[in-house]
Length: 573
Image (cartoon, helix red, strand yellow):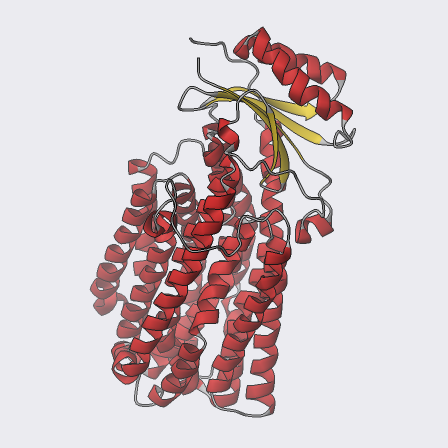
């Protein structure tokens, strides 16, 4: 039976999406400022205290660090998106079992890789283009890194998992503590006590260990989806590979970065030896800095879009993609412009004296800065694909990036010299963007909203006039009997409750899911104070224990992307 479509006004849902995004972005930006600047400061301390040869050793270690990040990203993003979908559907028990099996799998994989790298340390470092001048420094740093690899991976994965389990405040605190320990450890160890390069690695892994201990506080909260249970798989549970599948694009991305680093080091070391590796280390730190803005703006797409996807709300997933992309571009573009105009400010941080580096770095920094805009565009689209079960397309885009980057970098090495890696990276991003926009048809929704499966989409402040308009729309698309149920069990209790504050923005929607079920949904949230942005609200929302999308004719209440959601489902006719 076909129904009419009621009012479609995207403004209110869009405002709530933006409000939700700040709950993810503000802690992420603060955490990333500390988390990404701490290795930058570590590089500065190594460069100023030990010189340019030890500093260049960091570029040979970075591919190994990225390999561990790939493991953490696979588990963190995969488990986190699965948890967000469980939040949308109410499958709390499944979320706990997936979380437990993910932590076990990450720990076992990390230990196995660490043992292999420890046994073959020198051959691996030589393959990564360590030179006679920096091999000893690279080996010392690597050994300490391997000893702390488990907390490093669990900390990286925990950032995504706990954020998706509605605890971004704790993630923020853990990131700040880890970064402060890293920064203080580097300054005291390198600048004051003049220890070897291993002290810098120890400061990093000890900070990550402390952050993991802080994460334990999450498991004392009530109503969480992530907690340790017996690692069994029950009927209906996703297998570990299915649960982690949404994280494959993130893992492939870090593998891609590692391959790029290997090729980059190959070209730069052949071109200028240790000076080339020094260039690589400076650019790596620039990328870390720009990641503060690209990641904080693109990563909230995953929990936001996956929750809407789990709800069966395709219009909501499209709005997330559009809102977060526009917001991220406004955040990133001014930063890119400032660094591109004044690259010497960034070079000065590392006390660079090498004339080859001073001559070639400014242009490299400009190219990398503008490439960050394409990186953000790619990341936003890939995160959207990961959240909506289209990981294969995302993985293909990264495969294209790897192939184009390696081919272009090696092909341009004889022409562009030390600038070949930066040209290769930009060309790879352009090809990947084109593929996603054309093959994935992801341009849809970036500039114009589409209702998708929304029958009604409106909102405002809950007053009598607004309610009458909503009622008329609901009656038009659901009929009188369902409308009466919505008003008796959802709207009237909400109006009579303390939750209905006069200045509280609401969104009201009616959607039809792919299976033909319909749902009336009211979202609302409290004031967006700085405290709530950083640490979330103190109130505990009700959590229905059943699969919320399959509870028919009753109002179910749950937390939804830091908002409160009231929903009534009606079975397909």
